[in-house]
Length: 181
Image (cartoon, rainbow, N blue to C red):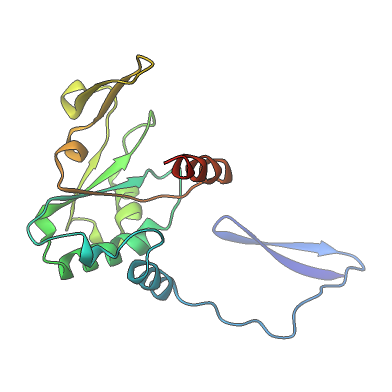
């Protein structure tokens, strides 16, 4: 009987497959660490100058990140992003994280800890609340009459960094919008 370990969420389950053969590559190269991958991406961003060419000391920076339902690895990249902002002269007190909840519930303290990682308790964090008019700034209406309201902290920041993941459809639409200018 062949026992095969299968990763399932944060656990590993073992599956018995009678008569199965497992094919494996001869060698597996070790991937770069998350820290190396993130540092490389921050040093050479796609279609943007690096932060050092954009951010100035003393600017108020808001980082928008996904809530706990959309895992992005934020506990890995947010500390490195803040480290880089600090190197640009932006102090911790000038940085805030806004968790983009959409219509989801507020995050628990444990969920905020998971999202912020080592930044928890160091950087201000706020759950966006789309139903609280005090948190929103009215920007008017679109040409088709749709009202546009955004988070007040985002609207009042000097710099906004939006993080997260993009599904293939979002990437396709984003490419189309950019190609139309």
